[in-house]
Amino acid sequence: VFVFGSILSMGSWSGHGDLDLALLVPSRWDNGTWPPQKVDVTMAKILEAFALVKVKDIIPLYSARIPIVKHTVDPSRRLYLASAKPFGDAKYMATVAEADGEERIHSFERWQDAFEFIGNIPSDRQWNWLGPDHSLEMLGIDFDLSLRGSGLGVSWLLRRYMEQSSLARVGIVFLKHWGKSVGLNNPNQGYFNSFATTLLWLYFLIQRRRISFVDPTPFRTQPTSDYADVAPYVPLVECDFPPDFFQSVSGSVTDFFRYYAREFDWESNVVSICQERCISKKELGWVMDNEKRTGSPVYYRICLQEPLEQEVNIARRLDGRKKGAASVRPFFERAIAALDSGNCEAF
Image (tube, rainbow, N blue to C red; front, side):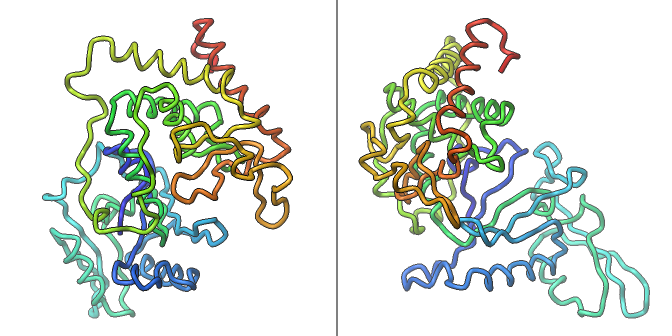
């Protein structure tokens, strides 16, 4: 199981977001049998495995472009960073109804030992974890589990950008928070997700020459042995950042809002880190005449190009009812107006 997403690209985890996970079988990469053709059958087996270790609140999403198994934790049972158990001192405890009718508690120092014990419990015996403090850490974390490795390649690509500058890392933390608070980062309503916000930020920084362009060609959609390496922690801010660092971040974020409110041509151009130069919708054939409006629709009113699967428009769900750029640009215009007026609560 590989971790990808912001925890890999940023080199750290906030302790509050969900985890993106990929279940991959290396021995089946080269012969082309992974991901499996019958994804629904494999996902059903995964659900059965989760049920064996009492993972609740988990559902399959078969209809997504990349099918996932989604785990959403009840807030009362969520594991936050501050409450995470030290791995060395972790104790896993389970109550088991024994053959004599008595309920006994079994304790384990290692999760591997707990798994082995659970796997040998007879099917007619009832058992459960002894409360959330003694169950698996994964039971207290939201996560999405897929069977594809494309997210790994993209995450390593984004990491090469984030490693270049503390400005890139600090700026995206703020912008993700901003996007969620104003409703722009809201995929359930057909708007952007956190990945789209990251692409907007990196594209802006490349165009402003604040970071260097990274060629995406070496980053593959299928995992390589390099992806198995443990990625080192990257601090959010370097220890030796200059005194005017946060002023620089503030200025760059303000410029970001102004760029997408007044400079970027949403109607004609594509937000893309696939090339260093500006790419037009016409070049990619991403024009309204080529939209797919039935079945699983694809729209080209606003275009953000997926860095590795370059035929994919990440903003393909922004349809005509939201009037394309007219529905997105106001978010950036309100941010600029609030900053210019000094009323930051306005956005």
